[in-house]
Image (tube, rainbow, N blue to C red; front, top):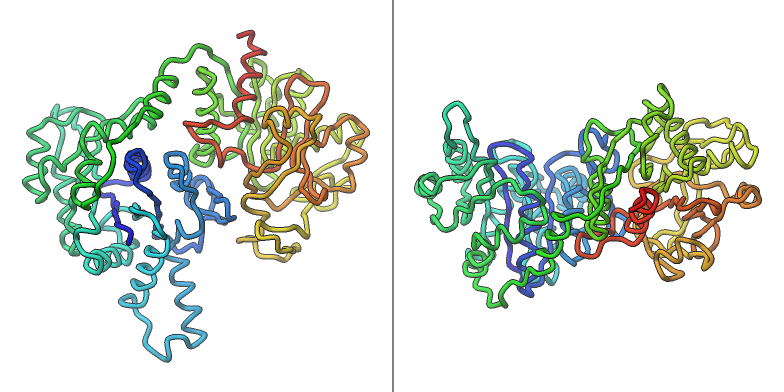
Length: 541
């Protein structure tokens, strides 16, 4: 049976529960413990797939084609376990499934209540998500005290009783704020947060207290006294220069030893050499480049969380400091190319909708004409194809039907049929619901042996993750190829374009998939590393 670690947060949101939980998982993995992770989100949306990136941040896509919370991206970057649809669920999903069963009569006429029906469903999903792991770390979204997360908190209270205190423990993250005018840190918010937890029957076993200042031992002792937590189990976590240093920081504080002792796990000592190497490379770059990213969700850069991390990983493995200049695509539409002039490389990421499209197309054109290394991802591929169709292939009014339904040259169009990760044929049309109707998840791509992309990956068949509704229109492929565009990657059945390249260019690659979802700090990703190396070459380094 799996053992469980339940991670909650208090005082304020955005404390870094996901990073802390993933860092603990990394240490346990380094002790040769089989770990998995779950994220329970308290919002009513069935999944984050139709939520605005400006509110929720990035939608992370798992290999099995599930749209999940961005914290699952942290999980996969910190541990080797691959996440799936079992590793993330929302209040909305729980209620939708319970109500659907009630409508089918599966509850035999019972009155459906939060307790026991909703909490039982939550518990069963936690147990299923734990699968065959030694330890399942379960992160509860939201902040303790909020009404939204109460069913989750009640469920984990019950589950601990059911599996026994020796098989489950609670970790609570709080903020210990520093009051500059007083010149001291304040423990009272943490005390109140734990009091809130205890009022619903949850006593933390471990406290991780976050701060941007050193926390005095006297303050840690006070927190332990007022929260009924062992002093050694009050773990201070100060802001780190890099998130990849946090596993070592928590290990030095003895967090993992407390966990294995409380759960009665016999295991090896932690070997964090890989993480120390990552930090050493990140903190000591040898080169510097300027990368311009042309996006549209810039009010919340968590919208591009995996992408930022993938660039960071490439920077680590090339010992490069990458100065990222985020440019709103609409700024290029209004003010022209000036913001791109000093770029060593240009990246156009994914997105949806017509807003900012012309700015992204202009960025692709500027990179192509000025021989600047260019990486287009998803919508960035669409922008590159539209530019090439207009500027090189002679299709002056070429566009995507996503923004212009009556375009005379729909070089990008809504695909109506494709094969999913299980080999099943999926179909859609304009009336299909937005939620869950995209080509999604890990799928195979066949690379042209003559392509740059083949040389980058070092093989002719790759698997990458998708999340999109629109594709390169196959009816125009021959014309685009005739004008000099290289189709470097296709789906195995040859019907879908996956990668394009501009042949007479130092480095111009665009892909329909999202390689950022499979980049990790320890391994990097060949496409991003090659891209950064191309930028270094342009910069003369």
